[in-house]
Length: 618
Image (cartoon, rainbow, N blue to C red; front, side, top):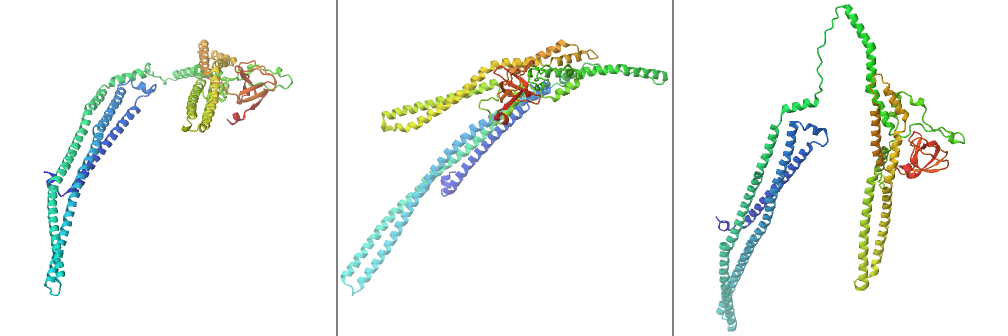
């Protein structure tokens, strides 16, 4: 059945139907596109799910995955990654084989449909013009016939009237003949146009419209076949990944079958087995005989009165005394000078003020009191305080010289900044060269432009270059300062870490004496513990080597002469001016610096401190 013969008069309905077919095709394209987005989202969620439950490196979870059940679960997570990859393949194939192809086909289909219906409308307009010509000629023929009939009647009336002159009769006769001739001409014209219209109408309904509608029918049938093929492709894309998805599922089943409950049980035994023998049977004690019970009570009381205290004291010494001694010894390696600073001299001879270590009475305090004092004190650990200062700077604005960073990180940041400034300088210099060349061209060819118009731009670029160079020199100076200070600072940090190791020898010896005097005599390994102290000191030396120098926060003037005889202190002369790098933290000591390699603590009462305003605000 052909649309050209059966639907010759349904031009408008065919136009609506073909547009509906294109809408259906676009709807299917939208459906496939949303399906691809769902597949991508599903694959992404599957990957995130598998990643979420993957064991974290260097964590307790890695130890758990030695069990076969956990290994199977890990294999399932890996297979889920592959499973997600197949859904990504589905999305990719549907996009390339269906969505893209159909979108291109829809555009071609719209153009083809537009051309066919344009031809149909053109044929309609032509037949309508022919029809209008036919109607016009018909009305003209009808009008001329009526005019000829009226002219004939008027002639006959004039010819019958005896009162009319012969001339008037002749004039009426000629008028009637003219009208008859016009009617004959209109008749011939009407007949010709009618034949032409009939021919055009026959061509329109039997040739033009059937051909156009036949092409539209073929176009629509191709659209239907194409959407069917796309649906087959839609199914084939899914079917192609089914074997791989099935393989993933088979691997999951294989992993599940590899679970060995006996092996996991054995692993639990190996992990938690203590090796102790279970307790034996408790013997029966007979209390029916009074004498035996009295003897038993006496023996029990003797054991409580004599044996228990020794065991209790020994256990306490072993379980609690030694960790306190160890921690106290460790912190003695880290803190600043422990002894209180000497009071300012009352006389004019400040050198007579004692500046020695603490009295022996202070060192022989009970261990519990020393531990409490340690817990409530604020040890001055230089690396920790540097971190604190860096954190406080981070909370505010970052310093321009990156002084809040460790030395190596600061050097990298400064080097990066210098490189960026050099690139900007090179860029500005290239721009200056280009402007200079353009100015030379203008000088040689004044018709191309005014050379004076470039002077302002050239001056601006030169100022930018000078500004960038000054900025670069500033950062290069900071960079040179950091690179030159790092080795010297390392040596100073080593001296400071050595100062901490020799800070309170009496305290360390006192701890060793307490250890040797424990009742059960179980802690006599002096040499091994001394070795631990040295290892700890070495570890902290490494931390101090990485420390950046503390900036000066003000200046101070020595009010009295101070002889720094202890480790960590520095000698000053009355009237000497020095830099303050650390305020008094409540322990009576202020940290000062004389030059790059000389710094230490002096009693706060011996100096008059002048802090910078910026340091006070920070």
